[in-house]
Length: 319
Image (cartoon, rainbow, N blue to C red):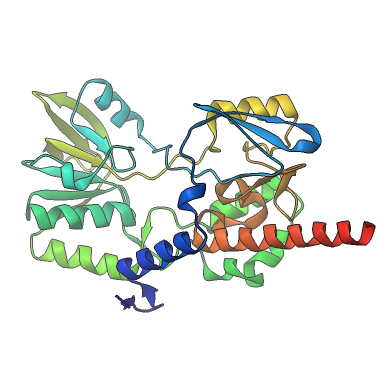
């Protein structure tokens, strides 16, 4: 169970899952978990906020918006057209995508340049060796982390915190992130699999695409062509602010402050409005490029706890 991966001793999957399950049990999160879809948000004055859901409303003195980007898979325009034509194309971040239930294929093509594309191609090659092509739109970008480790502490965050412009902060975040990258160990696995013929690895962009007799024909910018009966996209997530229409409506109705990119402008304590807080992607203009990952979640929790402690101290001083 206690398996760790060099060079930074990352916990193995089984160990991490066991750790998470223990935390869930200790905090009794299962009995507090309500699975519904948010459709609206409205203030209740001193009573907090009301979150409208698909099955009724939930009211609380404090609401924390921790929305991810998982419902926003990024589809290239040419892939959208293939989907509209009924072509055999899926996105790895579709809610119903599972590798275990993929039907058998003659030639699968995984399109993407990052760790998700690489790991998907490796997984499929175990199932059907030699019948998988990894089509990368750029040369491999090898980085151990999503962004420089300096963003976890003052080395990089000092300048970010000192920058008053949210536009400049957004640019700093864009430049810091290693989009479409993979760690060295995954890159080595891809090179090995290609060397032994378990996968075919190509570096090219899609110049044209069409559905022909139920298959997809891809014309690449290097002049090559690929035909596939299973095109799998690993092209990441759309960077637009999560929340969609219901959060757009709340922002407009309750004058919640946002930057030109559409993301919240919040306090150091991640407070968007009285009783309303954010974490995850919604907090990245305050927390920086690590806001979306586990390190960012921990940083957000620290900020929220510190803010709650300050409020408690103020109430005690006023009593």
